Image 1 (cartoon, rainbow, N blue to C red):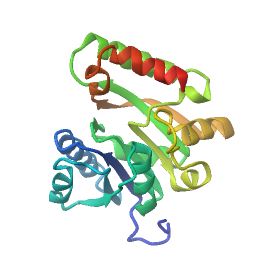
Image 2: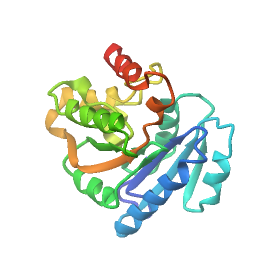
Image 3: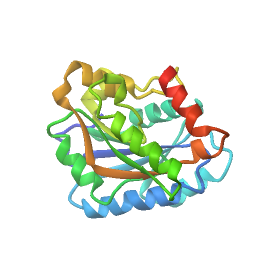
Image 4: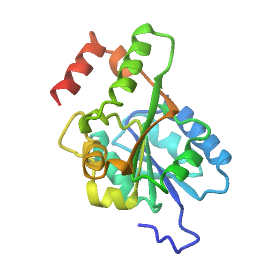
Length: 227
């Protein structure tokens, strides 16, 4: 854990879980680098957690000299997120999926929000022009506005303070979906005024989880309902 009094400690830790992401990861890291340049006054570190990949993900990570390589052999995204958080030195933790591109002003906006909020999620748009993808993310961006703790879902692009992670976390490693609920739903229940859903900041993510399987959108929706 970073000491706030240490001027060498990073303010932001950007944690990217990655399993077999050699194709998607370069664009994600490029978007993070752009956001870092835009928020140049902020101290930040990037940690990419290789979640037992069998492709060239490790090579992609290690080619980027500004990225810390972390290896996590416990398979599942929440395990990788927790491994990254354990190694992070920043007092603001930002979680970005390996197929998700944060906006240019993402880091500067999060640094501002973290002075008032403990946990935050943001708007998400799908890549491509698929009508199913557009409807999917329009639906979920609307659902997350509901005044229900478990509606505060989808960890593709979110942040929390280190103190919130230590008090409410970690990510639940026992579930398939909803691993973020200890943080998002926990904060919303305990101190609603310290949770934010900022729809003005929007990341772009892949629709591949749904597109690659028959009835993928319906099946993923039913898994969330069941969870």
